[in-house]
Each structure stands twice: as structure tokens, then as C-alpha cells.
Amino acid sequence: MSERETDDHTGVETTGHEWDGIKELDNPLPRWWLWVFWGSVLWAVVYWVLMPAWPGNSGYTKGLRGESDRANVSRELARLEAVRGQAGAKLKSVSLQQIEQSPELQALALQVGQSVFGDNCATCHGAGGAGAKGYPNLRDDVWLYGGSLDEIHRTIRVGVRSGHAQALGATVMPAFGRDQMLNAAQIRDLTEYVVALSGRKADLAAAGRAGLLFAEQCAACHGPAGQGIAAMGAPNLTDADWLYGADREAIGAQIWNGRNGVMPTWEARFSPETLKALAVYIHANAGGGEEEVAAIGGAPTP
Image 1 (cartoon, rainbow, N blue to C red):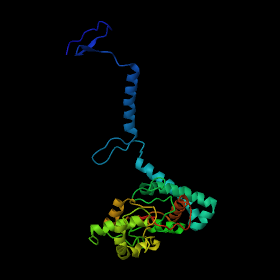
Image 2 (tube, one colour; image 1 turned 30 degrees about the vertical axis):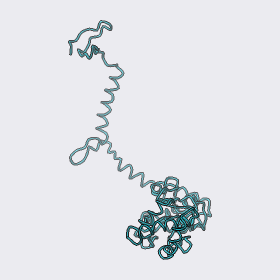
Image 3 (cartoon, rainbow, N blue to C red; image 1 turned 90 degrees about the horizontal axis):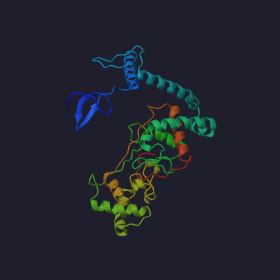
Image 4 (cartoon, rainbow, N blue to C red; image 1 turned 180 degrees about the horizontal axis):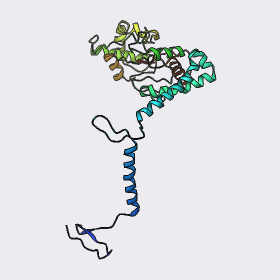
């Protein structure tokens, strides 16, 4: 610290502070800065009076304007529901097929379905519906529980292992290793057998040893040739589509742990019109085919 003095170069008085020989000048703040500062203080006081601002022990100051973000959101949601309700009324009395056959109704369903999908489905299936590891791709022609418009609508409505009385996925993949139904060597042989089923190079000796094992343990669901049984939700093991990974480690882990995914039922949350719109949207983005019933490998959802 040093005493205040006048700087020889600028003629400005110093503050008396000095660091390593550098002295601080006592220049006044720019007038424009002071106006902005005091204007901000004034605006803050006005805001505290007009708007909710200060927390208290049992609540907060409401402000003279009575503004509430919670109330504003509730009003916006109510407005959105009213708009959707008006649009949905056009979809209520028509079938799924009639919606797709009418350009006007299909455009409406696609608009509603896209909004609902983004809010509720994209978290798992991705914004474009392309899925990810453990989450099915909804944009291809590979489906576990059927890819027709009616089948997609059913899956959305009741879900998979969702607790709904009509939920899909009653058949589950056993955890052959974890539950000690098979030993590690048997699971390695089965892994090679599944790799061979999908047309890839495999250890033929191991696959040969697993042939009888597959017939005894796996064919009841996946079929004798491993092509899956859609009615049971059992995936096709002979194609190139795998939900949890196609390498040996991933296949072996699936046999060992028996993953069985869950898709929620949306029947209680969405109106019948919204369910229709969502089904039409997914069906259209998947190509709109009526007979895509091949299985997603290991997939618990469509």
C-alpha cells in the first residue's frame, strides 16, 4: 500500500494501491456505464414488484401482475390438447386403412404422429426412429411382432412385457448361463452354431456339437432352421439384423443372460386417435409395407 498521489503522466490521482511498481489510477467510471448500472438496478426493483421473485418460508412473492410459468405452461398444454382434439376427431371414426387411403387424413395423422413420436418415442428409438443397440430400428422392414399397420398399432397399444393384459412378449429368452441351464462350453458351441446360421464363417466342429442342443433348447421358439416364429416374438437367427450385436461376444452374452426388453403400453396415456396417428406415422416411415414380418434378432419390441 502507498498513499494517494497524482500521477505525473496523466495528472490523475491514484487510489493509493500499488502492485509491483504499478499504481492504480482513480479514474471515474464511464457515464454510460453508470447509466446502464443504475438502470439495471431500477429495472430489478420494478421486476421484483411486478413479477414473482423472492422466495420465503411458505412460498414466494407473487408480484402485482400475478404471472406464473406453471399456469402459462398449463394453458399452452390445454391449448395444444384442444388443437389435437379437433384434429383427432377426424381420425376417431375411421379405420387405419381408411386413414392411409385418404391424403387429407394421412397428412393429418403424419403431423400428429410426428409430434407424439418426438415427445414420447424418440428417447429410445432415436429422433428419426433408426434405433440403437438395444433399441429397435423402426425405419426398416424387419419386425419382431409384425410390420403391418394393424400389427404396429397393436404393439403400440399393448406394449411388450408391459403389464397390459394383452401385452406381447409372453415368451421370454431364458438365461441359459446365468441360471445354469447350460455350461460355458455348451454356450460357446451354441454361439458358433448361431454364427453359422447367419451365413458367416464359424467353427464347424463346435457348430456340429451344438446341433442337437439347438434342437432341444432353441428350436421350439426360433424354429428348426432358426428362422424365428413371429407369433411367439422369436427372432430370426439367419439374417443380418441383430438388436444387441452380431459378434460372438454379443451373441454369447445374449444366450448367457437372456435379455428380455420391455416396451410400455400407451393405451392408457394416448387417446385412440393418437394411437392411430402414431401407428400411421411409424408405418409410413418404415416403408408402408403390409407383410414385413421378419424378426429383429433378439428384439423385444417392434
